[in-house]
Image (cartoon, rainbow, N blue to C red; front, side, top):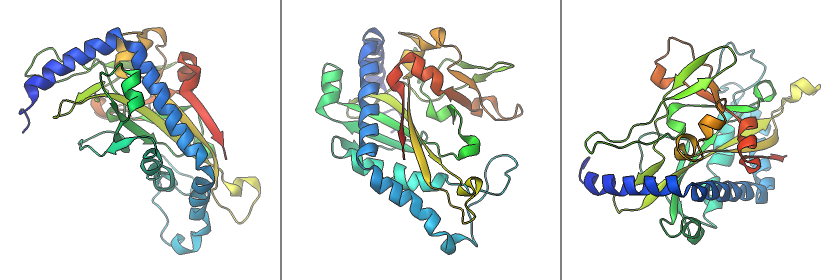
Length: 295
């Protein structure tokens, strides 16, 4: 099975990669369209999302003796990890909301973002001049509280697409190394997603990466003795496809500080080290690449 479709995937991939390098505006327009659809799906169902999200605080008596496990370095202990609340009330809900405008396939893949959906409709066909009617939406949920509410998101190697070079038939796809550039130090970032997939049925599927970042309040910090962690706002960010980063229009050359060092220790395997993606730089690339909804 591993090599059953390799020959036609190799040929189709190289053709599709060259096409989207030459017609990179189609990738940009595709990313803009998909982000708009995700944003609108959340905005139009915001009341339901807020109610479901905030219910986790009201249900405190049912889990107070079995709280979620602390995450991060040296947690203070006065707040509860809320990532799974966001994943279930927003992440798990999004496929159902997107079904209004897309056909959705849960195509298998051994690694990637929290939510991986092949979405298809006629509008994608229009955007790509009928090269494909689909894209692979990699959607990452990054829930934070007021202490971690910063203008970036931490991303793993399997959440960013790269240059996607496939020169030798037998070698498969590999990505150029990205330099995560910080003020004091740099480190290599080994992104592992290709910019395009070719499915076994021949479907060409460019990758679209979107970050959804719910931010919750801590009522205990606002003088409310009862506590609670209600939803405050939701941020949305579109990370450019790897071809846009490395080829045309070569965002990495024009915006070298888009990726900067993550919070992993130096002793961690370099291939697994994370990086941060700057929302401020994304906004400079295109104003639509970062949006927010107040709750």
